[in-house]
Image (cartoon, rainbow, N blue to C red; front, top):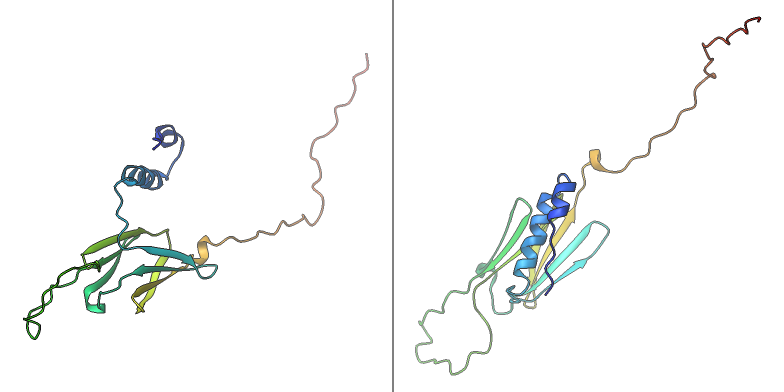
Amino acid sequence: MRAYDLSPLYRSTVGFDRLFSLLDQQAGLAGAASTYPPYNIERTGENAYRITIAVAGFADEDLSIETRENTLTVRGSKETAHKGANENRETLYQGIAARAFERRFQLADHVSATGAATQNGLLHIDLVREVPEAQKPRTIAINKPAKPVESSVQPIAKQAA
């Protein structure tokens, strides 16, 4: 793995400290990052996104979704099955993963979650980017002056020698 030194960028930029700290954080966690549960990130429109997470075996009550600042956190914790009617049942092999997880996603500015739904063992989280009017690009017309500007500088008269 390559290590990048971002310190020269710190001293020549203003306001990008959050971006650089995210890059440093991801570079340090690249080898230790968990791959459970698997997920997809899709663009569904110009300003619309969808995160799909495989949560087979988890009920809606076992999942929680939280947004705080620019972080979307998805947690899943499966409660151990109570023995009530299944007292005689013994699991001989458990190949279906049902371990607890926590997955965090860093959201860009002005991106927020609009809804979530589970379908066929997949959790779909819809996101939308809503840029405020004040920050949207706008064109500025260039006006021509009504009449030409006259020079107030008088020419210098040549002196007779």
